[in-house]
Length: 479
Image (cartoon, rainbow, N blue to C red; front, top):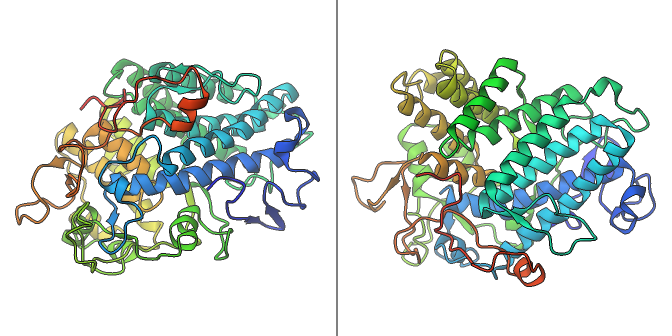
């Protein structure tokens, strides 16, 4: 799913589609010269394009590899993801890569045009979305085209190493944050075209700071001094998201709904492919977490990857057409701050931030975390590692259902939740620990990345010639 077939999104009276006649132009933005596309027309195309790619392809893969769900025993749609055999020729790999870079074409066009016009509002918005999309790519694949990407005059952009891309992403965010928004051109002002914050630039600044904190923390295991210096600077500013950066305007109609729901439920027309994984399901059940009833339609779980031997009776994952697409949720913002405070600021505020994160994660489901924060989810106040484990575990749960890719990436970075060699059918299995897929094809090794898109390798002479397997670690993964 890309932005051309993504759900129509309603924002007040504005209906957005890249070809919709209600835009202020009468042609598809992609058919116009880049400099001719109005900022307030192309920005929605880019934002919804990122939402479509992250919220469908990467959400599905991430949900399996974060062990939120597993393939139904009475279907076979996603077996290649669940058994780790997904490869460079898979339609989901090619589709995710091309759709994200398609969205980045719009985002980077907005950024270039905004810089020319000295419209620092759109410049900041575009930079944030550029880094958000690029971080997903670099964390799944390793080296990616960044500096030379999305240039129509360059069909063979160079692949830059992950550490170089990370430095560029941090520099780009810092540059955008340094712009004086009060001097921004007012020829075009963000408003209803901004599906995330409705033109509130204070919140976009907080979004940028929170994303930058994530960029630094993602380097905690491989470049600790870079991570510490960047995080300390941001903690001192203390200007992070306190509400979610999300698209919330989906409705329950074909091509207008949440992209994960649209892909898995409406387009495939099968409502039972995704079943409750023992990994997350047993953890929620053990802790009497009320989110269990929001996530699954029952309490029968299927061991991860047990789609050949399973009975087909495991509970079905609940998805809604109107679920938001979260870029960074309020819960994730608090958990990022809690981890940074623990690692780099003595942890004096970590408990408060952790508890705010848990509360926000429950609030997404209209639930109250008070009892569990006084019980099973109480802040451990133990060693730094124990406290970080609690933070990451709760952050992992908060990513359900559409941000499982973040849970997968964070698991690889921190090794939380922990991995186990104990079969989930064994009574000694510890709920919540990642278990190797029952039908796994990689000899006991967990997935760590995606293979590069076959289409990209065929058409870009600068693409890596060596095809790294899904079990090869990406650079931020020091475990």
